[in-house]
Amino acid sequence: MTRRIALTTTVLLAALAAGALAQQPADDAAAPAAAPIAPQADADRPLVQLAILLDNSGSMSGLIEQAKSELWRVVNELTTARQNGKAPRLQVALYTYGDPPPQRLCALTDDLDQVSDALFAVGISGGSEHCGQVIDTATRELEWSSDPNDLKLIFIAGNEPFTQGPVDYRGACQEAIAKGIVVNTIHCGSGIPEGWRDGALLADGRAMSIDHTTQVVHIEAPQDKEIARLGAELNNTYIPFGDRAAEGQARQMAQDTNATNQSQGSSIQRAVTKANGFYRNSAWDLVDALADGAVELADVKEDDLPENMQSMNLEQRQQYVDQQAASRKAVQKQINQLNTERSEFVAAKQKELADAAGEKTLDQALVETIRLQAAARQFEFDGGQ
Image (cartoon, rainbow, N blue to C red; front, side, top):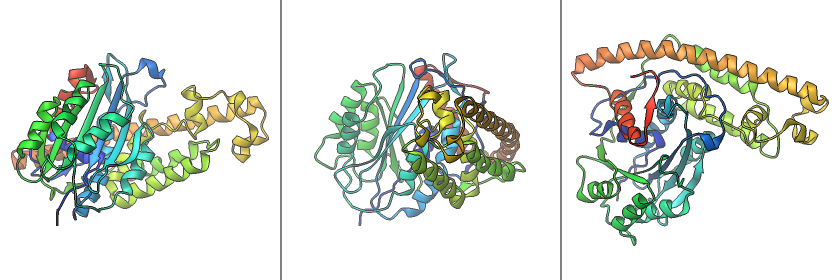
């Protein structure tokens, strides 16, 4: 039976960042802490778009579980990115392609809870892996930015020949790069077969291989328990409103639970994500919606407000929103301060492990390579490494 590997956003990025075989455990060091990104007009902010193409055939459920645990960690690695001093927006799309035709799990979106929800729903099925077809599909049907300064990346992972299926990968990769979309290939297994290497070369990307047996190591830190507690406390600062209120709030809680059940490291990293600017919920949270300019408070219908706000006048509603926003900012500040301390603690532990092994950890390689690739679009990262 064909055995394939389905990877998540973070594993794919981790492989990209490693730029080589992942033959050693990966630490879960927190990204350098960044202050929450202040709202900026979308038109003024650069865009990072990632399309993740996952082969979900075979029997690699263990790797899928590992991948889920790394989602929030890699998002956090990007929180300090700046292009010409401006924080970027982040959009992620997910596809599976183990059972043709390719299945789009979510279009390019900045709703990270939606991405996580789709990711945790990925199962293993099928047995035909058409790399060219899924690259072609993602290139054609997603709403890619036309700005040449934005960072547009496709990541595709699997372990079968790159030549399978009705669409020639060469044409698909050439069409992608013609639109400024870089294609990175990750072969799951030893070595990099010719097709996987050629596909990346055609689209200015990187060809890599990873070891699917790689285990994620969580380094416990004194700050972990408090960061996790504060991450849950953040939920109390949200004001669900509108038609998507119940759905959005339920998804937020579900993804908190998924992260907690996945691993302690995943729960910590999700809390850090929620304290920074990539985590926005303007579609259902009144605090984010007002901060992002998505709505005007005076225009929000009474029936669309939570029950405790419906009897308030406009001034009282504004005061309540301001109070919730201030509470959120205070909790986020605490999380980021604790994360700074945690980063220092974990970095020291990582150094001990790296010195003992004589090699860098995967996380260190990840940060280095992400910075190198983003530099092609003039992205820089605050705080050094």
